[in-house]
Amino acid sequence: MIDRRSFLTGVAALVAVRAAGAQPTRKVYRIGILGLGATSDIVGPQPRNPATHGFLRGLRELGYMHGEHFVTEARGAERRPERYPGLATELVQLQVDVIVAPGPMLPALKQATSTIPVVMAGAIDPVGEGLVRSLGHPGGNFTGLSLQGVTVAKRLELLKELVPGAAAVAVLREPGTLGVWQQAEAAARERGWKLLSLEVRDAGEIEGAFKAATAARAGALLVISGGSLAQAGRIAELAARSRLPAIYSLRTSVDVGGLISYGSDINDLWRRAAGYVDKIFKGAKPADLPVEQPTKFELVINMKAAKALGLTIPPSVLLRADEVIQ
Image (cartoon, rainbow, N blue to C red; front, side):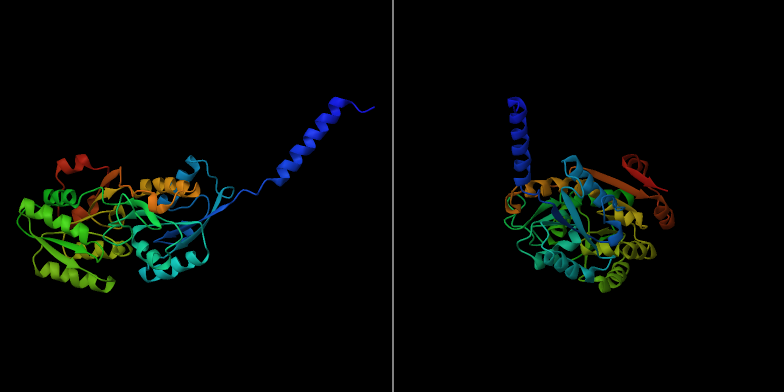
């Protein structure tokens, strides 16, 4: 005689097994990641690049495990802007679920796709560059984080603390940064400072811009960086050679020899980009996700660069620094 309890237990177990077998396989998302440097620095579950590492940490904090819930398709430009369009097209052709990319590579993605969600990990001026319709209502396939939280006026004020005087401040800028340039003009006009606009369309014009700054006897340099981030080392070198104290928006420039930077914490922006990816995976449309601005900022000073320029950093500025590189 079959024991009724054993029989029922067996039936329940069989039903459970069949139900489990009928469950659909959980989707493993594919995340495209673009980087300015080497591909080897942004691949895998423990990438060497601090920003990419911060992004994956943000995903882990939201419960996503690399290899179980998602995999990455990483492509690095090796600091060569001419590679941006090809890499963007490559990720689009792979039909990844979402792409995360830094500011300089976003215009190439705009040309490459109007359907794959793109999370901006620090666009310098997303409205001015035509990436989104507005910060509150992006309206397309782009959303994410902007670098606009730090006003350019703050950088000008810091620069004037370092280099007071009537000499003009040269402003090295690129197409697509018109909105930031207009902010700089308004701040300078209000404070009675002179600015010299040096617009460069490509890397080949950078050296000529420095010659123009020297000829105009500019006293300092403000770098409004978009795609020229890939030329950070060269710009820092030319600023030193031209004896121009320069302030940058990102610490990347200070790490490669620049004098001072004040701007967004890029690693934190990439960590926060994970939140956008999570929302998109859960069904949200980029068009409906407002673009956020930075919440963490850092002031970084390179004392070696200051010494080479014969520049004394005021104690009031040193005390406010988040990091001083000796």
